Amino acid sequence: MTRLLVTGAGGMLGRDLVTVLHARPDLKVTAATRADLDVTDPAAVRAAVGDDEIVINTAAWTNVDGAEADEAAATAVNGTAVANLASACAATGARLIQVSTDYVLAGDARTPYPEDAPTAPVNAYGRSKLVGEQAVARLLPHTGYVVRTAWLYGAHGPNFVATMLQLAEQREHIDVVDDQHGQPTWSYRLAEQLAALADSALDGRAAPGVYHSTCTGQTTWYGLARAVFTLTGLDPERIRPTTSDRYPRPAPRPAYSVLAHSRWAAAGLPSLPDWHATLVDAFDSPAPPAPWKVA
Image (tube, rainbow, N blue to C red; front, side):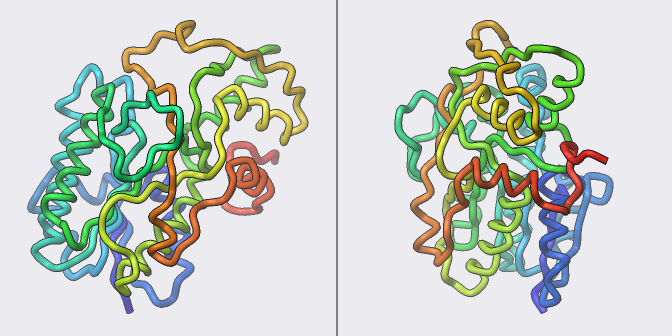
């Protein structure tokens, strides 16, 4: 029986991942929430990793604007803590799958970013996540995996899809930016992909390094909002396009977050499906319960 540790198990992605893994009788899964494990504590991390064969780290500082105000705190969670996990895995021979972000890239491209694209984060959050990526590459060159994702939505925790439906109850019209491009990705589908990568890593099919795991295709936040309204029977004309400069934020956002997915084939795995088809699946899925489900 394979022993597997999930860190950040109380978050949106972590909860979906634990659900996926607990359905597997061949796995012994330890789910560590923030209350269970302080990933910034090296001794606690070493003890937690123990004899696990693979660790999937979904713990993260995700407050992008908050990172601008306290980059050191963000880096402690997104960078130093990842080094703690990588060091613990290096000591025991465990494999590590680290969830990262498109924010490590500049976000100014016009074609999808390949996995080997140069990194150039434009904000503190991206810089903090890059520190974590570099720790995995440095400490686990043969057994470390970095999975970049973007535009996540899911059943557990705040996200754009849930926010749009909340605003639909409060406003007649909603202005949504139409100049940021990305790939909406259901956290449950990403969880399934991470589980498949763990299998492929353990049996030697997946080479270490960087993988991009977002849904295929692309849209804007405006396009996503209209799709959400359409799928829930709301009038998509209530969504109005606007530009990012109308909503200044402490942290600059990348204008282009579209990722390429070429490395999955070599690992014997398909990339995630089209973003719109996946959104339909998310709305049709009976479980897990989601904010958009009507009681």
